[in-house]
Image 1: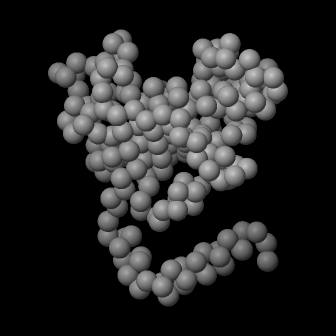
Image 2: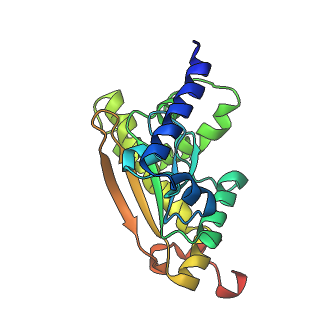
Image 3: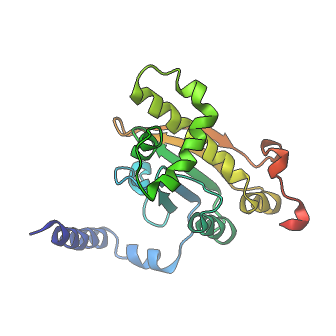
Length: 213
């Protein structure tokens, strides 16, 4: 049996196990989606949103990309954000990075990765802003992990700069924004920041007028 065939077999076993414990499990999933959380995470296969939070399918709406970025020109991410916030009306948006992130590690180097360079450029900009603090760390691993934390904080700030979040804050005083970093070595989340709906948290240059939203 090859690896691909193993996936199909495991899917069948998983489906049968779920059905044996709860006959209506898949009926409920098929008939509604009302998650309270939007997860913006890294594409790294070791950081599955549902598994590390102990939640079931349907509880977290998920978007993933390299190094959990909130890029203002990324129409994929913005479309997910708008759908989750305006239509699913999530109450929380979680930006979750992870220690040992390969994308962040690549961004602190001078190595060229071809097309990926354009994506890593966004992380390099975060490094530029926080380079003094990051470079205080004495080892490469510590520097990368410090930048991972700063990157999550900056992505949370980029979220509240969007008209999508600001419109929701004005209309329903939600969602809250949370910045996490997941530890691969211990399975625990380090909560860095929570931003409650508050326009004072947004730099005035990035605040939108009510009439424009």
